[in-house]
Every structure is written in structure tokens, then in C-alpha cells.
Amino acid sequence: MKALLFLLLLAALPAAAQKAPPSAPSEPTVQPIAPTRWHAVLVAGDASLQVWDRAVEVMGNGLREGGNTTTIRAFSARPDRIQRGAERADPRAVLNAIAGLRPAAGEGCFIFLTMHGDRGAGLVLPEANSVIGPAALDRALSQGCGQAPTVVVTSGCYTGIFAQEPMARPNRAIYTAARPDRASFGCAPQFAVTVYDGCLIAEMARATAPAALGQSTAECVRREEVRQNMNPPSGPQMFLGAGAPLSLPRFTPRKPDA
Image 1: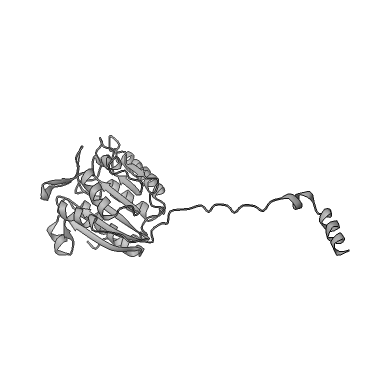
Image 2 (image 1 turned 120 degrees about the vertical axis):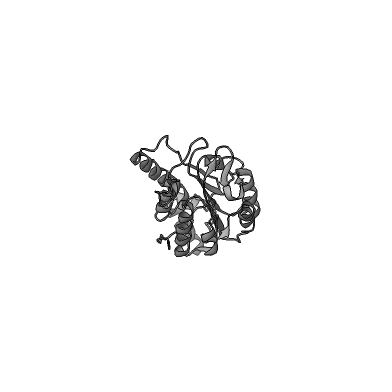
């Protein structure tokens, strides 16, 4: 009798309920983990003007205030800055510092280089009579950061060459102040920082995603160049690899000490 009642109840259920197979578990979506801590190398490579050192100072202060940058190494070509604690901006020392970063799991690299640029060559360190080019920087980054999330800013004239191979690797977000064939603006005594550095610093206080930072910084530069009648436009460049960082170092602006 119990078996008969069970069969009658089963027959009364909707056909879909009887025939629907158990649903297969969906595959989880794997997302790269954004770094929670950063290691920074900041370089002002030319002693002829204060604009680059001011930018490094503001950048360093903002990263410290942001709270998730573990180490900051600042380099300068100016004797007064070196006396105050900056390391000497010698190309070998800068590249060795980058090559020695070695972030652990959950950490990333942040590199900020600001100085004059030489067309087709790279960033110029005149006191050392030398240039840091894309190939040398790529080797240092590959050794020091490997596949870790990496953000690189090359601020100077003609720096678009740093957004191309060999620098353009999947784990990197790269920002440049200009196209490979264009100068950038603001390398003069009447400027506090260069046009690009000023825009980048302002936008880092707001942007949280790498793509947004590149877009908003380029738009800020475009507006400022129009306002000051600067021609031809510098055309800041951005490269985002397929595995580029999902986040940026936290940045809270603070005025420079001097």
C-alpha cells in the first residue's frame, strides 16, 4: 500500500521536476589578485631644474600617506637632495634598485622616472652622461619584478618608446608623458612640476584603476596644453598588458616640504 501511494505521488509531480537532471556546478571565474602592497623606485634624473625633484617629493609623500607602499627609494641628481637623504641618480644604481625589488606574493612594483628625454634613446641623466633606454629598463624590471603587477611611469620628452616592445609585457601598466616623436612640456624654471607630472599627481589622488588613470591624465594634459597654447600636443601614451595590475598604489597628496 505504501509503495502504491509513493508511485501515485511521484506521478502527480510536474514532468519537469521528474526529468530535470542535476545542474552541473559552474566553473569559477578566476581573476588576477590585485597587489595589496607596493615597492616604489622614484627617480629625478636631472639637476638642472627643480621640477623633477619636486615631482618625486610629492609622489613619495603621497605614497607614504596612502599607506600601502611598503618601500620607497628616491633618487636625485641634485646635491642638496642627496644631502637630505635621496640616493644619487646614477643609471647603474637606479637599475640595480629596480632589479633588487623582488616583490612577494600580493605585492607589486611602482616605478616613476622623470627627467629630460632623448628622441629614440630614452631618459637622460646628464650628470652621469648616460641614458636609461627601454631595453635596459626592461631587463631590470624583468629581473626585479618578474611577473608581479608592475606600474611604470616614464615622464619626459619622446618617452612613447617605453610603451612599446620590449617594455610592453603582459603584467605591466605603462604611462609615458609623450609620443615617441613628441616633446612634453613644463621643463622650465617657472613651472613647479612638468605638465605631465602635475596632471599625473592630480589624477592619482582620484583614479583607482590603471585604465582610468591613463585616460584622465592624458585628458588633463590635453586641456593644459590647449590653455597654455603648447604645440604640437605631446600625446601621452598608455600600455596595459592582459595581466596588468587591477589597482594602483593608494595616493594621498601632501605639499612638498620645500
